[in-house]
Image (cartoon, rainbow, N blue to C red):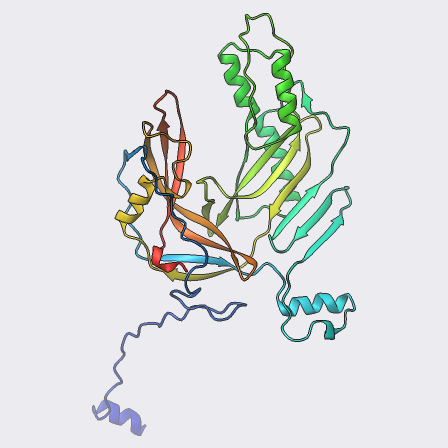
Length: 372
C-alpha cells in the first residue's frame, strides 16, 4: 500500500524501457559454437572463380539483374563420419575394448553393406554420405523394341524412393537424365530411321550407360536401309538437390543431384541407384561481392567457364535466380560440404557456326577475401 501511494504521488519514477538490440551470437554445433558472422573462419579450398579466358564469347542479358544481397548465409554440412561418442557406441556394440580407442578417437572411414528382403545389395559410405544399391540381372537385355513414356519411367523411380522413405523436401523434381523418347521423336520429324549400323551404335551406348550417350547418326527414311528400332533398356532418373528450399548447383553450372535411379524399361523396375542422405546444417553469414564483381564473373562464364564456347558465340541471359553453389573440399583429409549463395544466369547460346542450346551458369556471392 505504501508503494502504491508513493507511485501515485510521483515519488517513484518508472524505469524507462529501452529497445535493446539482440547480439548476434550464432548457434551451437557438434563442432563447437558457430558465430553469427564468419563462424567457419576463412572458407576452406580455392575460391570458386571462373578461369580467366584470353577471349570470351559475347554475353549479354535481356533483363535487368536483381539487386544484390548485402550478406550471404553460408551453410556447412555437419560431419558425415561418426563423431567420437558415436564411434565409441559402435565399437562397444562390437565388443571392442575401449583401450583400442583411447581419448577422442577420430573416425577415418565407415562403410556398411547389407542385402534387403527384395534382393538389393546396399552400401553406405559415411565419408561421402551416400547410399548405393543394385539388384543386377546378368540376363537383362541391353535394348528394347519400344519405349515407355518418360513420365512412366520417372514414376517408377519416384515411387521407389518414396516407398523406401527417402524423398522429402530436400529432393527436387525427378527427371530423366537423357530422354531417348525426345531424341527419337525429333529424328522421326527429320524423317530419319534406324539402320543396322545405328542399332549397333545404340547397343554400344546401352552397354556403357552415361548421362549423355554417344548418339548414332541415322539415315533418311527413304535410304532403303531402315530396320526395326531399338532403344537402351536402362534409363537414369535424377532428383536435383534442394537445401533450405533452394536448388543446388555444382561446379559445371549443372544441378547437383541428390539421387540417381536406374530404371529398366523391359521390366519397369528399379535396378540400381545412388542416394545422398540429408544432414543437419550449421549457418553463418559472410560478406558478399559487389554487383559489379558478380556480373563480371558471369561475363567470364561463371563457375562453368567458357569451355565449349568460341569467341563468336553469343550468350543471352534471359532469367536470373538465386540458388546455392555446392562447395566440396577436403579439410584435414576429411571431405566437407558447404553451400554458398549464388546468382544463377540462364538463357541461350547462339553458336557462330549455327544452332543454339540452353545455357546455365552461376556466380557464388561470397567475397573472394572470405576464402582461405
